[in-house]
Length: 229
Ligand code: 4FV
Image (cartoon, rainbow, N blue to C red; front, side, top):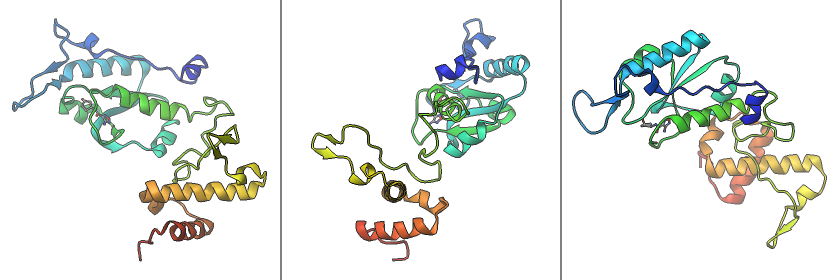
């Protein structure tokens, strides 16, 4: 992310909502109407910050990070590499006043089914996932190709030197130099891991006939029944 900014591939600006509060104590939160525990972020400071950003940097896609949002995916990350201007609203406390969501938010995104103290870390997660896919950000040694979810399945196991570590050897196939057999081994291990950890992905992954044959073998090996069975 540092290199991407140095190379002006991306500019990242942080805005403190307190700087836009019209309250003499720079308050950004207040008690919830209807009572109950916790505080809510006031609409005024967020609206003022958005207005300042939009007038300074022009229009952009306004995203709200919250557990109520649509789950963020690699597909979204890829799509947003084409965006010129992303604006992330990072909530705190119980959340932000609903009228900000209604008036300004184009997309509400969740990074996972758990509750954090603020939307900042989720915003950083999304920024990292998007920026690393911008051409030129990852060096050629690090490629996004082959990423998990790149083709809708999980990534295969990776090994590097030494050949033997703590009594554990690198699979011989990877030392064979036989590229076709290595490709096949990696595809099988991707499918095996996906079947074990994320079978839901297989329902929507673009699987080839070869993939289906591999999955049959794996199910037999692992004793994992097919849906039909
Ligand atoms: C969150 C998530 C998240 C909820 C209360 C901030 C916190 C606090 N954001 N994915 N999971 N946000 O937990 O995006 O306002």
